[in-house]
Amino acid sequence: MTRTRTIAPPVRPSPVAVAAVAALAVLAIPLAALLAQAPSGPFTVEETGRSYASLQQAVDAIGNSRGTITIAPGRYDQCAVQDAGVVTYAAREYGKAVLEGRACEGKAALVLRGTGAEVRGLVLRGIYVGDGNGAGIRLENGALNVALTTFADSQQGLLTGVVPNARIYITRSTFTRLGTCENSAGCAHSIYVGDVPELTVRESRFEKGTGGHYLKSRAAVNVIESNSFDDSAGSATNYMIDLPAGTRGRIAGNWFVQGRDKENYSAFIALGAEDWLHPSSGLEITGNEARFVPGLKRSSTFFADWTGEKVTLSGNRLAEGIRDYDRR
Image 1 (cartoon, rainbow, N blue to C red):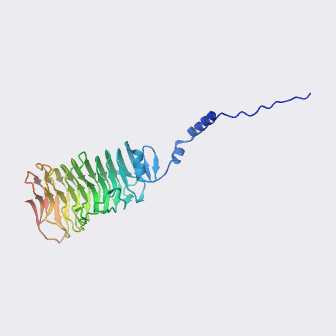
Image 2 (cartoon, one colour):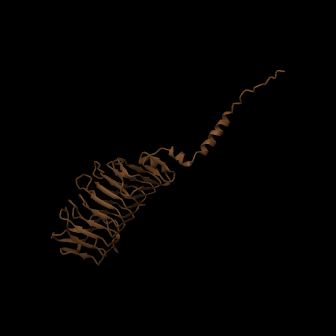
């Protein structure tokens, strides 16, 4: 007897079933493999693990949030503008991540106007713009912390205008081969801080200035402690510290060497030489050391004062030829 077998047509899965299987397959892929498929580059947002080809892309990815961008070792012809959020810019290996030669908005390598920022371990150098104010950092809003960062071979290191909510803290950083007085916008300086509530600079080095002052600040409070101001290889420089609008605070434990090539060697520190925005009574200047480069003999003043307010000077060790105080 002959048996007949009926073969049923194949059952085709529905589109919904196919999509479900595909979704399960994606879930089965290890997280590391998924991240490997993300865009790659030297700028990594730590909170998401995503990397980007440009620093600006990484900043934009953080947006109005809080995040850390880790920068791989290398030299980058890049800059970035931060409009919002709180962003940390950190070198993966300190001193080996370099932003060089590019100024955003004709201002700086980093233009910062978010809620806050921290810059850690970077090298910012070779920033020149037409108005003479090319800077490693231009702060336009928010708080700023800077640590273990080098500012070099630019018109300015750090520059701010009037920033009512800015508190700036700089530590263990280097400012070298900065400053100029050759442009129509006026002199540029290693640090030039406008009218802000507070500036603190600690354990940092200023050297080889190429014009202007090493540190100029209009902050209401300045705390400048345990820094070195080495002008021995400076060229056409002015004051070590210029506080042109008055200030309170403390200048303590710093080391100053005045070099030969000066546009103005009449003082190491100047107070109130331009306008008096802030009271200076209570300013303390203590425990500093000041001298000239070996073999140089001239007369100068350690602290030149245009305000006449009650300032405390104590325990400063001054070389021959340097007067303690001069009322101007």
